[in-house]
Amino acid sequence: MIYKLSRSFGAALKQHGLKRSDVVCVLLPNIPEFPIVTLGAWEANLIASPINPTYKAAEIAKQVNDCKAKIIVTLSQFAPIVREVQKLSSTLKSVIVIGDPVDGCHSFSEMVKVNSQGVEFAKGTQFDTTDELAILPYSSGTTGPPKGVMLTHSNICSNVFQITRPGYVETSFFENGNPQEHFIGILPFFHIYGFTVIMAKTLYQGAFTRTLPKFEPPVFVKALREHKPTCVHLVPPLIAFMANSPEVTKNEFVSINAIMGGAAPIGEALITRLLEKAGKYFFFQEGYGMTESSPVSHILPAYTKNTKIGSTGVVLPGTQCKVVDPSTGEALGVQQRGEICVKGPQVMKGYFNNDKATAETIDSEGWLHTGDIGLFDKDECFWIVDRMKELIKVKGLQVAPSELEDMLRTHPDVADVAVIGIPDERAGELPRAYIVRKNDALSENAVKDFIAEKVSEHKKLAGGVEFLTAIPKAASGKILRRELKALYLSKT
Image (cartoon, rainbow, N blue to C red):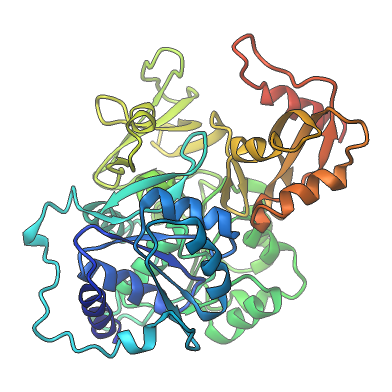
């Protein structure tokens, strides 16, 4: 059914006049139509660029304008915010809505009725799959504002093949008498983890996935009880919820054979607490990667059987990894800490229209510099121990300090500012602002409200605001965020 509907949708997109490599933005929560939209765009040889549906109009418009999208696909209830986006964009020509009809918008339900017979769809033989873009998610990379990550058809397919190799995952293909796997699609499909590891893997392995548009504790618990997942894909805040909520009991773990965690460091203590609560054996599989690697580069293999809790595992088939001294670039040995560098078929083509950022992330030999500090043990299992990059991870979602700092600098009463991430058991991290005031009357609530009007929920200053007489900086002018983090920890 997904195949048929996606081809009809792709045919409708071609009839609409879209040409090869035009960009279609996907502003959707996790719903069954998400893969139909994406695959339909691919059938028409277009590029899909997913957007966080909780974004405000200005945030959406920024991505739409950067990738020069021609069309956006969204829910009918999001039409008012997309109208605002259209006012801010010179490239966005059409809006497709899923749900109730909206004046001036195209109907998705009508588009999937288009007859696709005789339509010439994209074929891998017509282009170089290692060069042709499939998806353009946005990521801050190791630092700075979000950038379009150019992932090719080969990148995505390679990563799906890699993470489903026997011995690397505890999920099976729905064939040869194997029972059908049950997943819960709670991690957002606009995020590359949810896109590849849940949505794409579901289609490839023939799994049955129940999509949840957002995390609501009662709905999530109900899904665990009714859908009886065999494997659950989670991020640290969801793992903490399952470990700590009295609503999640041993009964909810009965069907589960494996839990896969990623998007941010999890920690041995939290994993151990979850295993103890389950009261049964299941495999806890932590993975590692980034949007720029489609996203998985490392995974804890099934044969470790929970003997390496806290490790992000070994490199995937076809992937190379080295740990280097950040100052010299020298490759390091066992148990020596350095920057994780990765090379493989899943590594991005580069950043969209940003050669400078690409050169700063992928070196001349093709190594992707992750900005994470780690080490590997004698069994070649890797461990992430620190982070060079400045990104804040809120519930697995990226927040670039520089983006919030730039916004705060526009406030007339702000002289200087720095933003850091502070630890939070539920969210992983929360953004916290340090501000030098021009006007002593400026309050914490005024600063929070100023940002809240401009950003989506996960970017709000939930970590608080503190006023300083000066922001600590190096001679080069670089903000010394480590000093601010030490200041925060000294007061907690």
